[in-house]
Image 1 (cartoon, one colour):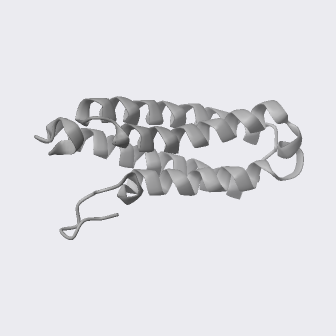
Image 2 (cartoon, rainbow, N blue to C red):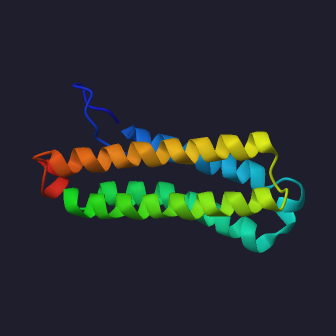
Amino acid sequence: MASANGGVRSFQDLEAWKSGRELAKEIYRETSKGNFSKDFGLKDQVKRAGVSLVSNIAEGFERNGDKQFIQYLYMAKGSIGELRTQLCIASDLNYLTEESFEKLWNTATRTGEIISGLIRYLKKSELTGTKYK
């Protein structure tokens, strides 16, 4: 996982991935409840967006270098936008309590902010090429 100097050696070390993983777990919990669990179309879309978010972070990290990683991070941010829209629809349909909606919304927003910070860092850094060596 993390290297001795605190650097990132694996996608599991990334705060963006950790936050996205927590969000995906919460999505699965919430979509298994009540009427949300019966709305197969929306439930599946929300779950796919959550899984796509965290998967794109991991896949991008495992690619060849900074430019591809940034591209995948942007796709992860796109999944967050999709997810937040779907959360609004689920809330409008009373599939989520106000507390659940706020928790998911805030986690999605925080994850997006972490990803944005990582993108800014990668764009400014001198890291390039195969696994940033």
